[in-house]
Image (tube, rainbow, N blue to C red; front, side, top):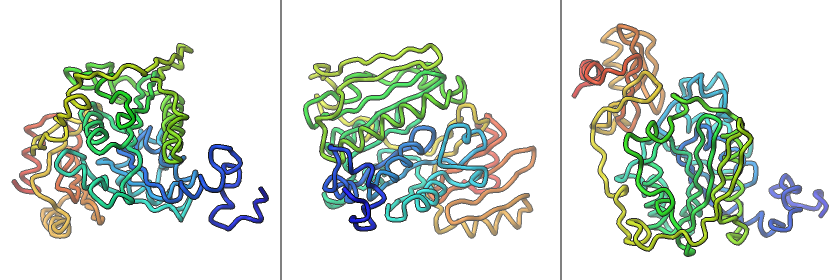
Length: 360
C-alpha cells in the first residue's frame, strides 16, 4: 500500500491500515464510528488522545471538573495553560489540533441518571449512537451507572481503574452473552472508593500504570469499533507495576443469571435521581454543591452580581464563572448549576458561602 496513492483523509493512517485487522475498509469504519468517554482524567485523556489519532470520527467527552496543576503529572491532553479550564473544553481544543476531522462533543456534566442517556447520545438515531462506552470515572456509582446504560442499550463497556501503582482493565459485552461489570464487581463498596483502596487523591497514582490500562482500553475500543469483538481477550487484567506483578482472570462463564442488572434488568443506578446535596471532593479540600437549577442563561447575570459584590479575581467564560472569596475560599459555578467551593471541607460553610454569593 503506497501512502501517496491514498486520499488525504486516509494517508495519515497508512501505518495503521497496514495492520490486517484494519485495512482501508476498517479505517473507513473507524471514521464513521462514535465513542463516548466518561471522565477525561488520567484514563480518559489517554483514551481520547489515542482514539482521535486512530481516526475515530466522533468522540463524546463528559467530565464535571476543571484542570488542576496536580493533574498534569498523568493527564496527557493538558498543559499548564489549561489549569482552571473545564477538562472537556481543554481536551476538545487539543484533539482538534491533533486531528481536525474528529468531531468532538464536549459535555461539562456531573453525569447522573436523569441526563445520562441524552448526554451520551443514546437516545438519538441508531447510526449516531456511540458504539462503545469508555469508563474514565473516579467513583463506583458512576461506573455502575455506565454499566446500567451498557446493558440497557446493548453497548459494550470498556472498564479500567488505577490507583497507587495498581491498575485493572476489562471489557464487558453483555449483549454478546458475556458478563456485565456488576456480575464481576458485585455491589459498590461501603464508603465508596476510599473503602476499596483509596483514590488518586489519597493513595497517589503512578502515571505509567494509568497510561498502560488506558492504552488497553483504547485497544479494546478500537477492536469493537472495527467490528472485531472476536479479538477481545475476555479477561480482566490486573497489575501492580511497583511490585512487578501482572495477571489475567478469565471472565468467560462468569455471567451471573441473578445479576440485578443484566440478569433481572433492574437499572438501579440509572433510575436514581440526583439531589441538590453537597459532596466533599476527596483530596481536593473542596465541596461540590449540587445543581438547584441550570445556570447557562444566568452566568452573565451571576458575573455582574459577583462584580457588584466586590469579589476578587472574577472570571467569566461560556461554561463557568469563577472568583476568589474571603478567607482563602474560591467559588466556581458551572452552566449546569453545580458549584465548587474550594478551600474547605466544611459542608455547612460551603453552603453558607454558596447561599451568600449565588443564592438558594
